[in-house]
Length: 186
Image 1 (tube, rainbow, N blue to C red):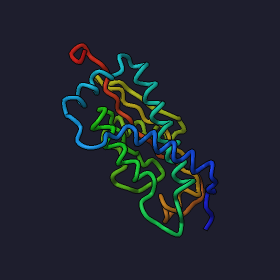
Image 2 (cartoon, rainbow, N blue to C red):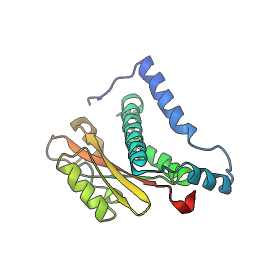
Image 3 (tube, rainbow, N blue to C red):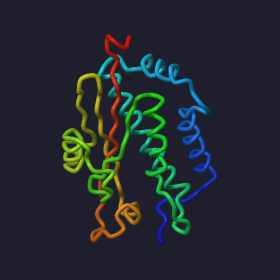
Image 4 (cartoon, helix red, strand yellow):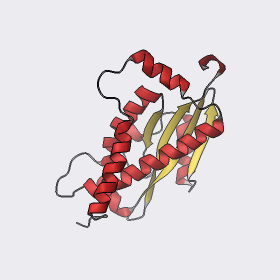
């Protein structure tokens, strides 16, 4: 089988640095619940523009981390969890520690029921991605909802859609929900 990326000492170092940055957001040991909640509120973006910037940053960080993990750690001879599944652990911690919700949208890239749209916003976002838009967003009450495209090249589909009948590239999405600072949270 063809491997889409090759390991090199530099790429392993880069992957390690990327994973270290992701791990830095994960608290070690039992964190004080009130301190975590206070930090979440204190760090809420004050404007939609600030939340949008954070969503774009998170999207790029997760997309980049996903690509690095595929390149450096995925081995056809040792199947296990795929990198997108591993990142779901990071998503859970981001929700717990920061109140930021992230989840995958399957788009045309997977048949996984867990990655189907959960509401009308995600349905519209998935439609936009499938139509070629790079991102889709909306503001609801005190939250920015953002979905960015995750391109799935043919070589990625051997795991994501193993029973595919065509070789064309596909698209999935990363859904990010960021709470906005309100008068009550100040």
